[in-house]
Amino acid sequence: MATLPNPLPALATDPSGRSVGLRLPPGKLVDTTIDGTWHEPLLWYADEPAAPRAWADLLPARRAGLHPLLVHGGHRKEWPEEWDLSPESVSYPGDHDTEDILAESWERLSEDEEWPGLAAAPQEPSADPDKEAAEVASILTDEGSWMQGARVALVPARRSADIPAAIGWSGPVNHEDDVARLCAVLRSWEDRFGIRVVALTFDQLVVSVAAPPTTQAEAEAVAAEHFAFCPDNIHQGRHTTLPAYATHQVLNQPAWTFWWD
Image 1: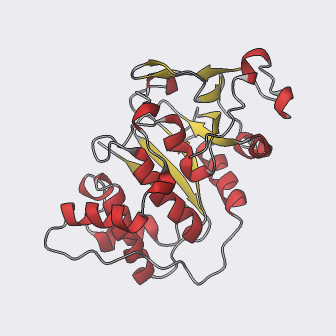
Image 2: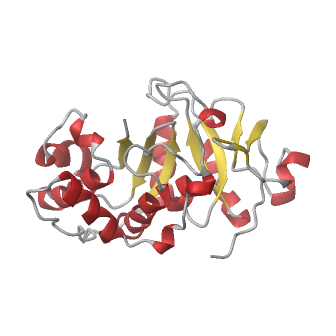
């Protein structure tokens, strides 16, 4: 796999981002990993809470190979320097098969039930994924949101779905120790449902959804994927059966949130 150029080192001498066509607020570069200091920055994030349009305002950074993200201290109150990032333990998302990953997890978690297979993409036309992501990001930064105080960040990645792998995020480590395998699933959701990775905390992931399921049957098919992707959503969530989870957390929902214990 060819390594993409990382534009972030330029921000060390040009914090405003003008050299890559950006106007950035004051912020910091993160190169701290669980094993020490990484050889280049893994992400940049702002010093102050994000305004509602901050995520959308950074979309032009994609031309420089950087993807916008919201980061938050979460219930642990830990920011990216404290996230146990582990880029050395991550493979390449494109080397993994989505159905194999989900089927393996499903069979481990549901020994008596056969893997139902991947959900079909919705028949309804998708909304614009970036526009939907900008709306979700705006809601997350609103006063009263559980992510109030989130800060805008930039991550060098091939696509939005690869953001967790690009920084070596270890949020799901108790379920999956190579987050690139989960990014392979995110890539598939990006293709089928128009998701964007919008926000991360130490152990939480929020994606926007431009084409969510619009029928109960479709939602239950996607809920099965969610269970294999993040079993804690059901095992430790408010809705502990797949039909209930599908109704309340998947059907017509513009965002999906995942949490790993």
